[in-house]
Length: 116
Length: 112
Picture 1 (cartoon, rainbow over the protein chains, first blue to last red):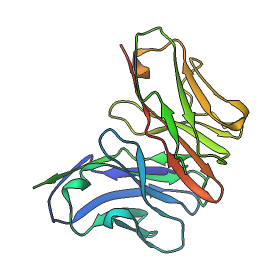
Picture 2 (picture 1 turned 60 degrees about the horizontal axis):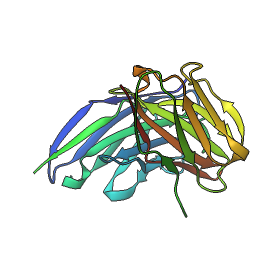
Picture 3 (picture 1 turned 90 degrees about the vertical axis):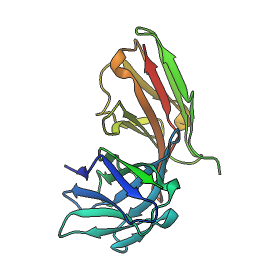
Picture 4 (picture 1 turned 30 degrees about the vertical axis):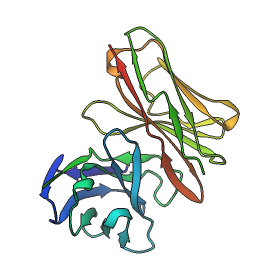
């Protein structure tokens, strides 16, 4: 069965600092992996997704994530945090591996705080 | 292209009452999903429609929850009677085989 663990429910960084949000997954099949962001009072927005085409995935707003099969990780990074990045971030895996129609298994979420 | 639309955006009801949430998926998306996030917990899958058929309803918490998808278009999720533990944010999403998920903005349900 697929599962996702996000390490750290809260992460605080200074504006301009590196953002690193950790996600480890477990999957019995080659996975599709996702990062979503939820800004206050808004819905879930897709940041990026891994679909086996390339291990380094670039997303919106300067975010990227690297798929590392040996470490079963899919950590999200951004070189320089901006105040507008403050939000909650969710890592997810599709339960059907390489499919756009499987149900998603979410991690617990990480709240990112950006300090001026 | 219109996105996934959910309404109401917020609902406050008393314990024992009935509430119906609605989701309008992206036109042409055969797959429609409901998810829920209760306070402080992870987002959890409730069920999956393919067109008007329930493909997977393994996440539905109990028989107080009833989901329908009329004619394979919009979907409703009814909670009857509502309990305090049903409070949370209910998300709807739709997808097509060649296109990934799009989520709606969610309905925040508060049962008092």
